[in-house]
Image (cartoon, rainbow, N blue to C red; front, side, top):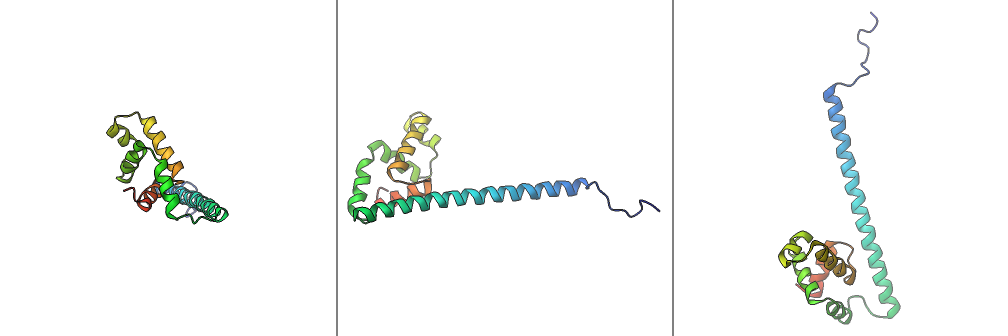
Length: 134
């Protein structure tokens, strides 16, 4: 009785679909974990740099003086865009609301992130609240 009861070498279609689905979930989970790790790395690098500058100049990073300086560096339009970011608007929504081009809105967002030394939108919102802008 050769071949009877022998294990199959070809996977059943349902088993193959289940394996592919599981592999896709694992891939997505891994990608999300890598994104999170990258964001944390950027935030820690930014924090390390800010602390280092504060220690080397003798100024505490959260002292009232530098906060006001950051606020003064933002243009009126950037403050307007910042308020829309805090409201959860996307760059496309901001462009539409203000009647400006998408690239202009994206440039405002990039300038705000650079001036606030914020690596992502969550950090921008946190800084806006900390500075009392919103």
